[in-house]
Every structure is written in C-alpha cells, then in structure tokens.
Image 1 (cartoon, rainbow, N blue to C red):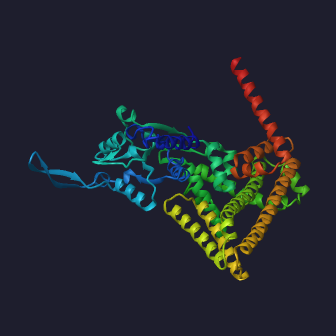
Image 2 (cartoon, helix red, strand yellow; image 1 turned 180 degrees about the vertical axis):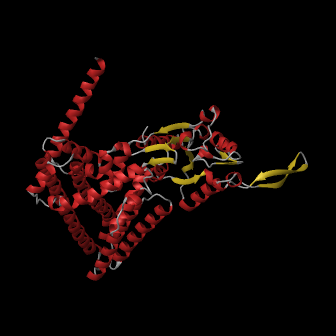
Image 3 (cartoon, one colour; image 1 turned 120 degrees about the horizontal axis):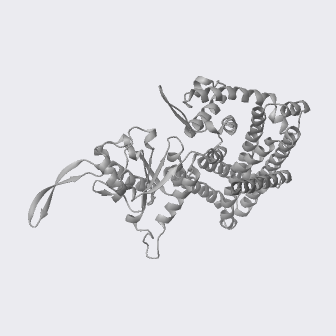
Amino acid sequence: MNIKRAKEEIRNTIEAYLLKNEYGEYEIPVMAQRPVFLIGAPGIGKTQIMEQISRECKVGLVSYTITHHTRQSAIGLPFISRKNFDGKEMAVTEYTMSEIVASIYEKIQDSGLREGILFIDEINCVSETLAPAMLQFLQCKTFGSHKIPEGWLIVAAGNPPEYNKSVREFDVVTMDRVKKIQVEPDFDAWREYAYAKGVHPAVISYLNTRPANFYKMESTVDGKNFATPRGWEDLSRLIQVYEKLEKTVDKDVVVQYIQHPQIARDFASYLELFYKYRTDYQIDEVLSGHIDDILVKKAAHASFDEKLSVTGLLLSRLNKVFGNVQEEEEKLASIFDVLKEAKEPLMGAQKEQPLVYLEDVKNRFQSDSLAKKKAGLLSREDIHHDQQVLDTLEKYVMDLKKENVQDGESAFSLLRVWFNAEKEAYDNGFDKAARQLEYAFDFMESAFAGGQELVVFITELNTSSPAVAFLQEYSCERYYRYNKELLFRENTRDILERIRQLG
C-alpha cells in the first residue's frame, strides 16, 4: 500500500487497540495487540507519518532508531540484588530499567498522556548481540525484564534487505506476531501531501512531468544512485529559503539532496526554466485579470513541458491564496469559539471585571497551547495558528484598556464590532481569491482550450487540500463543469479498458 493508506491503517489500528469495553478493559487484550511492522524503501515517509498520527490521535510518541543503541542501553545494566527464597537469602541478577522504557514513563510524566506510540526505526538492522532482545520485544512487549506500559502501542519500521546490507530476516515465529504493512512509493499520494505542506511548485510540476523520477534507486559501480520523497521535500525547503536569501540552486546543490546525478542535472535545468517562465508569464498580472494576448499565444504554442510549468505556476499561486484564506478562516473560527464562550460571563460581569476575565481567557488559551506543544501534539502550523489567535486576543485586551471600558456589556459590544471587522476583511479576501480563480480559468481556456493542460489543472485542484476546501465554499461553475467532464472521461476509459480486457 502507499504511505497515505499505511497512515490510515495505523490510525485505525490505534483506535482499535485503545478502544475499551464497559469494564474499562481494552477490547483487544494487550498481549493480543500485535506490534505494527512497517517495511518499505528508505525515504518514503515511514518515520514522518508517526508524528502526524500521534498529533491527530492525540497520543504520545517516543521514537528511537535502534541501530544507535547498545544492548545495555536497550535492556538495562545488570546489578546484584538479595532475595529470600524458602528462608534462604540468595544473590539475584536484575537489570536497571531500559533507557527506552524509562523514556516512555518520562513522556507520560511530562505530557500527561497515558496512551501513546513507541516507534522503533530500523528494527531489522540491529546488531547481533541485540537481535534476541528485539525478538523478545516484538513477541512479549518487553525490554529485558521491563514491560512497555499498557496503552502504549508498538510500531516498528525497517527497510527491505536490498536497501541495507545490515538487514536480518525475522523468523516465522516473530513475523506471525506482528501486523506487517508493506509500503510502496506512490507519487499521487505524495503529491496530495506536498500541496498541503507547501512543497515548492517547481518540484511538484517537475515530478508531474517526470513521475518516474519521484523515487528511483539504482546500483552502480560507484554505489547507489537514488532519488527519494524525503530528498525532494528537503530540497524544496532549501529552495524556498535560498529564494529568500536570493541565492542560486544549481546542479551542485540539487545533487546534495537528489543523489542521482542524471535526475539532479535534469531538475536543475528545469528549475532554471521555471524561474524564467515565472518572469515571462507575469502570473500575478494574470491573476489580477490583466491577460496579455501575446502571452496567451506564446503559451498556446509552447512545448508541453513549458505549458505544464505555466499551469504549475498558476496552481502554486492559487494554492498559496487558498491556503491563506483557509488559515484566516480557521483563526476566525477559533476566536469566534472563544467569544461565544465568553459572552454570558462578560454580559454579567461587574465593574472592572471584563478586563480581568478576558486576561484570564487569554492566559488559559496560552497555557492550553503550551501544554499541547510540550506534549508534542501541535504541528508547526498549529503553533502558528495558536499564536495568531493569542495575538488577536491580546490586541482585544489592549484595545479595551484604551477604550477604558467599565462593564461587560460594553466590552462585548466592542468585541463584536472588532470581530465583524475581521470577518469583513476575511470575506473580502475570499472574494479576491474567487476572482483570481476565475481569471486563472480565463487564461487556461484562452491558451489551452481543449488541451491536456486543463485536465492537469482540474486534477491538481482536486489533489490540493487548500483548493478542495476553498471549492467547497465557493461555487465555481467552470470547475464543476470541467470536473464533470474529467470524471466522464475517466469512467469511459475504465469501461473501454474492461471491454478490451474481456476481448
């Protein structure tokens, strides 16, 4: 399965394992909760999805790469204790608590989360001395003599032997005690993630034209040449920062991340052209409704790669706009919830109490956000969202102080006015985004009427989560018309393919 489907399956497993019956017992007993064993090529996102899953399921996460550990750190150090057996005192060998198990208890103590995921990476690359302990770990959920706390699930990951010489095969007895998930590289699944994460448009549009270069692993006399999803995402971040620093990303830089010389050289050439197209086609002007007929003709007669690059440039700018609209909407929704909850207490507040109450609301929101951040339940985007809400609440408090408001009813009236002003600004931003989408359709229809570029444009809108969210709120007649035609074409192709197979 692809990484998206694997993530969904792990989430389902967590929900199933943590479901309790009316007696407070786990529906699936702890010893029957098979560890999940993710196996797949390096760089396809196995490690990354664990952070996403822990945040989405609101459970703790403790991660270890087992190849960094010795037998002593994984199992614990031996020591001699004295015990009494049948009236005789005996010396007994015991072990200190495993560093890994101890870190789970520390996570519980720091975060307050009593349920979570213990993620062990590269589990099938352990040293010979540690291998028996790993088999015991998967079979019995223990490190040495210490058990993993109840409510903490085991997810392990490893690479197939063709990618790592250190891989050791698990026996049938062990494999029969795990839930094995085979993960394969899948560009379509990654592209959806890439839009949501704001991966650089040059990377997305390049891979749209050359999907075979998304993941490639080749053996040569000089070693492995490879390109991985991890490499593309990390390269994307570097390109975005280099653009802010006005630095150049050339082949020598690209090959540091895409360690396949031919693909690195090809992408570096494409990136150079991408920047040229961004200047030549005046994308901002197009999205402002100023469409130059000369540029339309230039696009119509361009090479297929150039047409797709222009389409990608339009999509990337639209996705940024849609993302900003979504971000603002989520901020307003959070502020609305705070104000809704504060309305009744504020309306009943006595003299000088409104500011005290609002300060308390702001402080509680901040404390809650910090607790979630400490527990690892917030992504970078979540942290930014909370900071925006906090800044707005802080501004409300400061403005009320300036207005010298003395009662709760007056305070809430002002809050309503300020919130409505922000809502109006959001509505204006939404309308502007809608116009930009319509202008993009104007350009696409003028330059690529009836071409595959419009199919790509619609397909990419359907792939991008910010675009999908926007189109659920905005009724774009041309989007729905073209989307309907696209679905019809796909259904027709499927039917014809089935007929061909039957024949």
